[in-house]
Image (cartoon, rainbow, N blue to C red):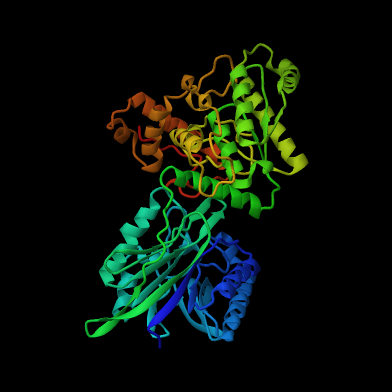
Length: 555
């Protein structure tokens, strides 16, 4: 029994399926946690999250059980106990759960009750919900152990409170979304704490896993809604929180001493950090030596180059300019200036020999037909093939540079500029690209490895966007202004509005109907696009999953 508890919150990265590395990371934290009573790790930290269908492999489940027992045995030295999230089997069913490891054994296990099954989550595919959990006694405190989604509905916390819990320790694998940190604190955690009168520690992981990225930003809130601790976002952190038993009425309650209050990244730095961390972890975890990308002199490739440099450092970023007959001198100058500002290698590989060769090869078949989109797409595909050749020959991963506005309406060339291994801009509309480009030219991200100061010429941001695949081409020849296009797409994609509803907001019916048609017919392209970091609530792939072939239209 104690009047003071030191609870260590370990906001860590993870590697899905790498049980040994994840366990070693937890033990390394424990070795440094002198004086701690209990170390808390994020949701499913032992096997990684989200494991997707990897969780269906019996060998993974068996090895996870062995690894958990080994972690439990490590607590037999009298040092800190550990709360470890993993997968558990009970009566033949899989459960997402958390185990208290104390005194050399698994002292208690609790299962997740509320299984999210929306957007990026599909936990009901794998797990059965556990029963309403009972508090776990630990050194004079009664610990309530809700897991992630368990606090988004009131039932689990109310049950734990009724059963005598006096501290909530909530472990999470909560992916980043724009404005989600405010929702977690004000919209969820504070409500549960105020509703039950019990303080709540919210522990989230940090790092990228394929198309999702976790921002950390763990915190502790008190029963009156006060923010007692705020851990940093976008980086690993281990923080000791000091809890004291204080008199309250006829009994007592536990309070956390005010601790570190880290400043979280504001908008749009949060978006930029999400892109940087997601790309960094994707490249490093998959063991690429670096990245290669086409640098056109346009804003999309320029900001992707900046993201790559901030993620990996300039020495691991290779940019390639591939001019054609329609590439302006201005674009060549801007690409060269951007590469110089970022400190990256820049090579120039003209594509006209390949364009001419394809023209000669296809001339007999194309005879009698005027040049059209086919010849434009050939240029893009030649560039895509060139970049893939460099990737194959030298090993760097090809970064794709198309934004969400283009991906929405199919303004991208399959097997051309859509080639690549990862796309930082996949869930970023063009207006977002402008915003983060202006921001990066004025600031440096907290987790960035790139230079201070401007990273692209101002002209790249201000000039009219162009694919430069025909004389005097502008994006506005084919699409509405991006401010209009993005507003329409926000309604059709993010909010699933009908054409009628978007038109009612003041947009031209013909334009909205055309955008809806383009959105539908481009689905087959998006199915073949590389992965990219999720930023909003309806990213293509994990959240918005439409059939390629269907006949439904709203206008």
